[in-house]
Amino acid sequence: MLGIRKVSIIGAGHVGESAAFIMAMKGIADEVVMTDIIENLPEGKALDMMQAGPILGYDTKIIGSSKGDVYKAIEGSDVVVMTAGFPRKPGMSRDDLLGKNIPIMKTVAENVKKYAPDCIFVIVANPLDAMIYAAKKVTGFPDNRLVGQAGALDSARFMAFLAMEKKVSVKDVWAMTLGSHGDDMVPLREYSSIYGVPVSKCVDKDALEKIVDRTRMGGGEIVKLLGTSAYWAPAAGVCWMVESILRDQKAVIPCHAFLHGEYGINDLPVGVPVKLGKDGVEEIIELDLSDEEKALLKKSADHVKEVCDRVEELGLLK
Ligand code: APR
Image 1 (cartoon, rainbow, N blue to C red):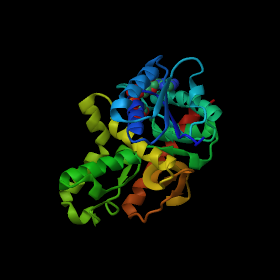
Image 2 (tube, protein in one colour):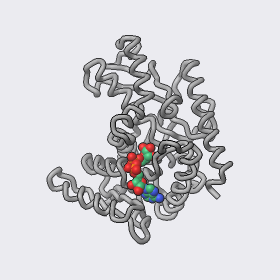
Image 3 (cartoon, rainbow, N blue to C red):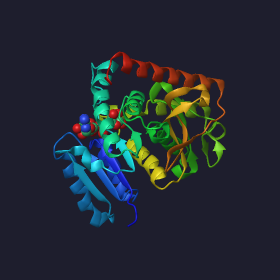
Image 4 (cartoon, rainbow, N blue to C red):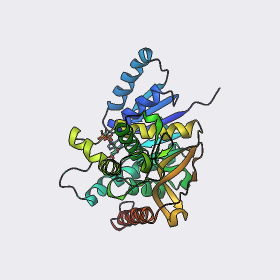
């Protein structure tokens, strides 16, 4: 029998279910498992998606698991995607969010280690830096099998805005951001291009700065419109990464990965261009950055260090 490509998604909320649907539509995985703590939710969503298959033309087996030994269903997954957690609510401090979501990661990671010990673990849930750190500590997975989704989304937003500005196909645009979401984001103007022409040469200077700002605030713009965080583009970012891993495409995608001296950063998960293949993070691509970009990336890494130290100070993994 041929090996099947199995992906499990922890958390069948907005991002989780959208990712499952895109994976089915694009035939990325043969089997997709969704788990959640809300009883019957993943089973219901899985069945609904299975019933869309005959019309949309996919054969992907989609399974939900919320009862009994919930995590047994993820057994043998090639990739596990972690989207479970609580969003930050008004009045909640960052420590409150850490206090809620790190214990969820602890339980999930223990089960990933137990049932899918050879998987590539893709982390989406926030606060991302702390979640990847916790995943590493709990699973003990080698760094190449831990990767976080942030840059794929931010870069896609940057590309979408550039295509809208120049009124060209998104296929003609390539753009990249490094670092983390928000203020720590490092949009790379020199490595972003439209039909191969650097954006600095083909996009009006003021328009480009507006696009960079809009990219930085991209998450907030959606929250204002929807009252909740984005999910289609984050899910698409996840699928971009998972497809490259499962098909061993070796696509270079901006992702959070542990660095070992690259960009002068050590043992911290930071958003950088990563070659993703069957072994997960197969190479960190080191770009020549400007002094300003280097300083921004360093600031981003400093924030990662702070939040990882805070996880330890609060004793959240004990
Ligand atoms: N195990 C499994 N699922 C859980 C657990 C847990 N311990 N705790 C919460 N969940 C589930 C919730 O029941 C919910 O269905 O995680 C799901 C989260 O879904 P949403 O609230 O819809 O959040 P979503 O928009 O999908 O975002 C998920 O991705 O992009 C990030 O910032 C975002 O951290 C957030 C995550």
